[in-house]
Image 1: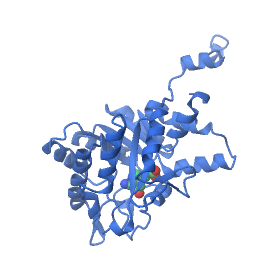
Image 2: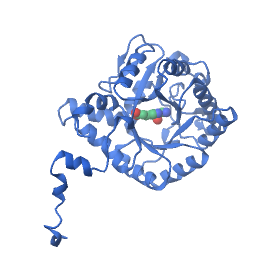
Image 3: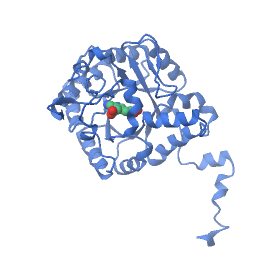
Image 4: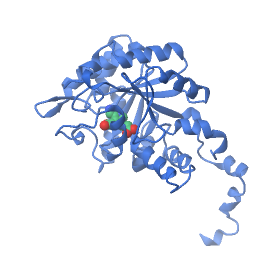
Length: 331
Ligand code: PBG
C-alpha cells in the first residue's frame, strides 16, 4: 500500500470545499427530509415537549402556521402524529377507526389549505388505546388479526381524507397486504404505503411516547410485536414480506443505532428505504448541543450518515433546523 505514495495522495481531493463537494458521494438536501409534527385535539396553544427541546405539540390552529413556515423554507413533507385526549381512549382504540376523528379532519384541512404539502399519517392504535399499545389487547396479548381490521379501517379513512402516504408503524403481521387490499377494494389506488418494516423495539422512543401520551404500557411488552434488536437478517425477512404485500417504501427505525440495517436493506431491495431518526436520538443530540458537549455540526453529520448507509430520505425532528440553517452548513 505505502509504495503507492506519492502517486496516490487522497488529500488531493480534500484541498478545498469546492473540490470536496465535487467529489462528495452524498448531499444533504431539504427535499429529502420529512418533519414529524405532533398535533393535539385539546390544547389551545402550542406546548413545548419537555423531553424534546425546541419541539412542540401544536394546537389545531397553530399547526397551520408551522406548516406554512416549513413549506416556505423548503420542507414539504410532514409525518403527522395526533395527541388524543384521554377521555377519547379505550382498550380497543375505537376512536382510531372513526372516519370523522381529529386526525382525519386535520388531514383534510391541511390538504385544502396547502395542497402541495405531502402528508404522511401514522397507522397504529397507540394514540387511541388506554394501554398505549399499537394493537388491541385481548386476554393478556396483542391480538394480531383483530388489530388488522382496525388498521384497515383507519388506513381507508386516512386515505379518503387526503393523506398522500400512510405509514403503518404497528408491526402486526400481514398488515401491509391487508391494508393494500382494503385500499384497492375501495378505489384508493394512488395511496402510497410507507411501511415501518424494520421497526425495532427500542429505548429511543421515550420522548415520542411523552408527546403522544402512550407511555402507560400495561404488562405486555412491545417486544411481542416490534423487532428484536439482536437481529439483522430478520429485517430483510420483514422487508421482503412488506414488498410482496404491496409496500411502496420501507422504513428503518431508529436510525443511528441501526445503520447496518439501513445498509443491509437498501443493498438488497429495489424500493426506496427511509430512515427515522427518532425522538430519543433527537433529544440526545439536542440536549448535548444545549449543554455545549458538541456543536450543531453533529446534526448534518448524523443525517449524512443515513444517506451514506443507503437511505433514500430521512424523517427527522431536525428538518426545520436544517431548513433554517441550510445556507450556513456544509452540505
Ligand atoms: C407508534 C410509533 C412510535 C414512534 C412512531 N410511531 C413509538 C412506539 O412504537 O412506541 C416513535 C417515533 C419516535 O420516537 O420519534 N406507532
